[in-house]
Picture 1: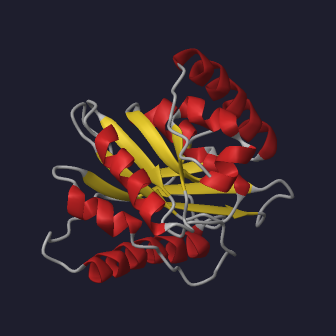
Picture 2: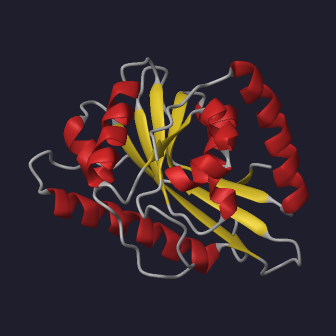
Length: 220
């Protein structure tokens, strides 16, 4: 499958932002947010997220439009891009996980997108939707990006849905702190560290979500 680049449409983003907000309000009882990272006006950021459901693909748009306000793009599996081609209009571009050479080409495109001011990227390092509670198995793309980029923040975002208190699910989002790693670390160690940070965040979400919301604010 050929590479599908991002082709942002400001008009489409405005319309889709409103539609998506209404969709979240209709589908979820409450969307909660714990935010420990706030990008500055000159900051460039790579956000990495766990991927357990279809909804995860819409969360970056909501966070960026209503909180981060950066020039955001997202990496999306080429099979999903073919199914949902309109996502390129909100900044998504494709990656072919089955072809290493094409995958690297997509990652290079991601690096080039950071030539823009206040750029950001959302990436799902597991590469595909995985069962809730399963062990994380990050691919090396996130660590590869860390090696190629300077002065870019790498920030984990934990996503957790539950029906502990209501028949209608609640969604908890935790935007963590920027991660600092030595450039000299091997790629495998970087990948393991990124995994561990997000895995710990998700473990904390599973313990507190629905029981203790004192550190969260109502996002939607």
